[in-house]
Image (cartoon, rainbow, N blue to C red):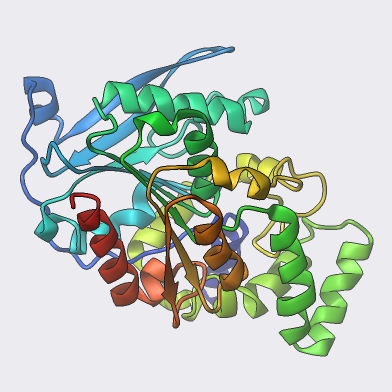
Length: 342
């Protein structure tokens, strides 16, 4: 039984994709709807997405009803699921916000064409735009929140379609992956025990990034410090469910094998939008954690490089600041959203 539990834990961590959050089992309000179909489905709407490989459906679910505030949540990964956002149920309903869970193509309840040619930023941006139109969001009410990979996607969306946005939240993501990698290698890695780091580097020197031992070393020593600052055995149910549905091939192609920087030939390895941030005019909230896998100062800098930015610093938070510094995270996030009405 012990070996079984250890194997499950390893597979869980192996498929990790920039995740977070806790479900406090707060009952969400009944969803009001304009259509009988949406009422019967509990706010769930399957949205057809046109791609070069055909039409596929993505899953969304609405909670609440507020024509002035509609928050679309972009999960991390790539290849994670909406489920780790379920902690938002403990905070957003009481504020009267309307918000949407959404599984990107290839994730969880959405279709999975299992075609790697569809796993690119430009196609995901067009997917978000299709979802926005289908959910009848516009610049009077549309707030886009992206966490980690979702922050990359939200940034790219804003650079192309910011005329549709009321506000933008980039949670736990820097605007430059090379800077993310430099921080992981030059700042966080040296904090690991010397013997552990030496073993990790030995696998990296051979490019053996998917070796189970390499991944286990990172999972045991790096994740509890910088991804989610709790023993993995105590991670909440929504996180475990999100991990169970993780699309690891998608994650591997775009992010690489783990959260210890983006390595190998992962397609996001050279992503950098730092020079373009001054083009973003809409109000932006950047959120960073002190113990994040990414430099909190770089996330603060992001808020200064856009034209109208704010920074929310989570002093106890890691990459999942919405979980391990939850009160700070949601107090600041709610304040920002309410401020968009002034």
